[in-house]
Length: 268
Image (tube, rainbow, N blue to C red; front, side):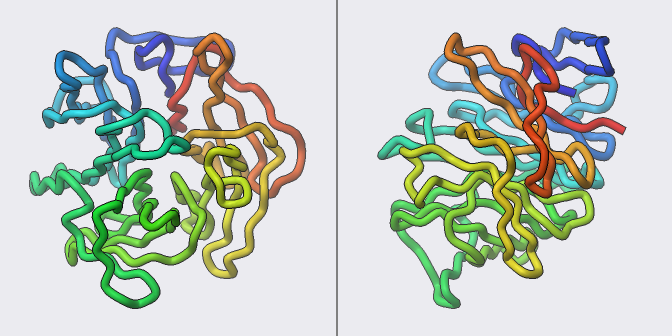
């Protein structure tokens, strides 16, 4: 699944089926599709939770510019990120809002800034804190990025406990591998987002980092197509997007997968 000209589409080999469902970002897991719909008047948008036939199960009104969305493996939990101010993680003064919805109970956390955060084992609260790029471990735990004080930490969150704790610095837009042992993410070059990002994979047990073969700057939350391959969008100079893949072990060369699309999602 991907987005073609802002419409949800499925791609199998050379065949592309484009639906009438408009999304700026899309993701699917279990029997749930998360769709961040395009911005309307006064930055109004919405999260649409859809079933596999693209029928609405729930709609959550939001304000901001759609940026990231993910669904837990079971399809129960949905996370999203919006730009509230600004449009780039490399810019100064941007602001994001990241929320999570439990589709089973209806529990809605509109902003992870409500959670209690710890950094280096100490309580952390700062006005410059932003979160983005949720990826779910299960229906309670998740990873995300927390930005504060010039750092971009990988954090592990507990939805029920309403807590997040910082783990590693310079990790943005994490994406958990199917076996739960690695994360694909974008790492700011020399810790400076204005120099771009290097797509990398981290082993969670050892913290060993493997830069992938894609040497262009990747500003996306990669998606695992399988245990060995990650997919990501690259924006062309004319503003259109292409989906590329790279091997998770850093070998080989990047491969262009789909022309004129973004927001890749693996389907069964």
